[in-house]
Structure formats: structure tokens, C-alpha cells
Length: 94
Image (cartoon, rainbow, N blue to C red; front, side):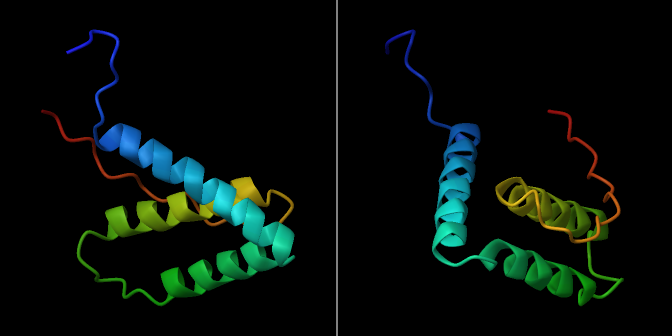
């Protein structure tokens, strides 16, 4: 194997998906003004509808927080109220 070759792993796949999603969201916003804001509002409603006793609530909150961060990077002018920071799940030690 070439020492300079980049191993395709979950981190590179996640980075690629994040980049592609960002491009697609930008394109959707260009084609339909307000698309990202409507999506943010939808995500906020979905998050508010999750029961408090859902298993692994800190992970669920962190997931929604990350989704909102991604959407707001595409449309930073969205004047929606900030969601309180979610506790991040503890890092697992390997």
C-alpha cells in the first residue's frame, strides 16, 4: 500500500457527507429562498416533540444541536432563537 494513500474510514466518509450536504443545502436555498429556515423550524419542532425520557437523551440532544449548527452554517442570517447548548455524550476511550 502506498504510504501516502488516505485510508477511507468513517471519518473521511462523514467529512465527505457533511461537505456534500452543505453544498446541497446551499443549492436548495438558492432555488427556494427560505428552504433552510423552514428546515430549521421543522428540526426545532421535531426536537421539542421528543419525550423527555427518551433513552440516551444527551446523545439525542447533541444530535439535534449538530443538525442545527449545520443548517445555520448554510444560512447564518436566520434569526431563529438559539437552542441551549446540548450536553455532549462523553467520549469513549478505546
